[in-house]
Structure formats: structure tokens, C-alpha cells
Length: 97
Image (cartoon, rainbow, N blue to C red; front, side, top):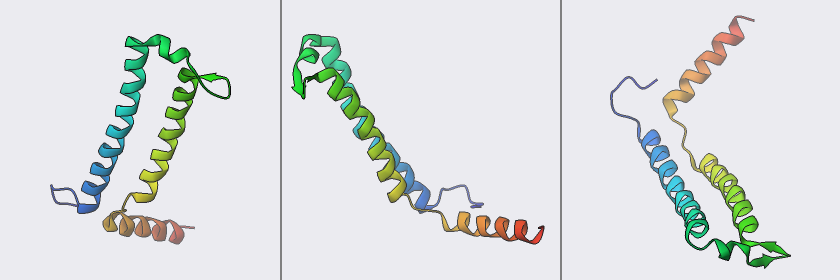
């Protein structure tokens, strides 16, 4: 575990990445809310296979959130000190069996 007060470079990267991905999602979600608030009739427009914009946009947001979660999971960097702590805990657990 990192004993200094400042976060590790990996943790700072992970934080910035998470905030960036959150802002991307927030922008798309804000668009959805604004369309519903100020142009609700647009949501009734048929856009894909007989489905209206509200359904397509809503399901698109859900799928996009899952894609962003996968991107975050793949791009996150692990803190080497956390790896050492995990290995030590695993070794201690193995010794106690």
C-alpha cells in the first residue's frame, strides 16, 4: 500500500480516465434529457426498424455505458504496490492451508 500522501501515477491516470469517460457519457445523457424536455415530439420519430428515437437512444445509452465500462477496465493501470500486497496476501493464505 502506498504510504505517501500523494496518489501514485497509476491511480491519477485511472482517476482522469474515469472522469473523462464519465464526461463523455454525461454529454450523451444530457442530450437525451434535453431532447425529452424541449423537443419531446422528436422522440416519437421512427428511426430504426419501427422503433422510435426514445427507445433507440435509451438502449444506445445502456449499451454505450457497458462499452465505456469495458474500455475503462481494459485501460486501467494497476498499481504495482497493490500487486505486491495482493501477492503477499495470497502467499499468506496459501501458507495457512
